[in-house]
Image 1 (cartoon, rainbow, N blue to C red):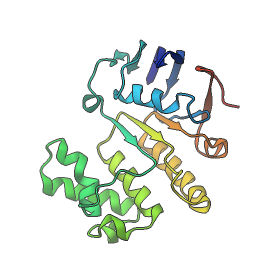
Image 2: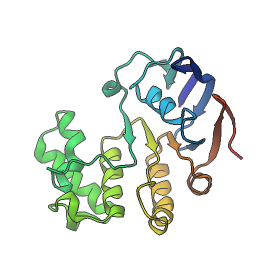
Image 3: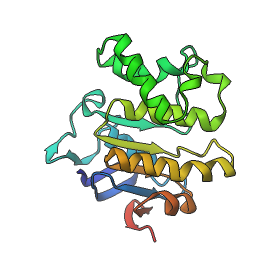
Image 4: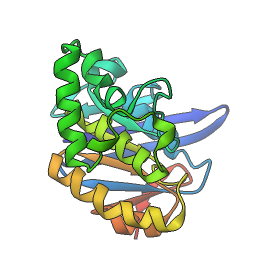
Length: 214
């Protein structure tokens, strides 16, 4: 269970987030809606450990992790630009997190090949990233996020760089894979249609506070 308790944060002199309380259960996808500048990405950064809140705390499975370093939280963060490494092939992009966890490179690559096969990408394992379509790159990004068995998944506008048809085709696939992994997931988006397609429920940031998403 991922929990945000009484999170507040300022942007300059402005109160950006005010007393945010939210819980996300294992296997649940919660969409965080709101316009640009509403504080969605800031809240995601606080969950990831990339920012410290002005007040409040982040909890996971009953433990306060507010002061835990990002790399020690074992959360996976996916950005809208995929953030794949152009100098690495597909296989080594997916294996990267396991290598960082000091798994032997040959074992990491073997595990990466297994998950690529599940995603229908095994034939692209030795290709460079730029040889793949946008949808294939996004699948690689998700495979890389899930291979490390993260405790939570944080998605920041994951489909905004893709065309409309591709966004629609990927939503169901991503939802199914995330639920199969059984991890709490926070999806930041400004697209209500996307939220309805992927999320189990939604909340909306309004003037720094949470309101029901629909």
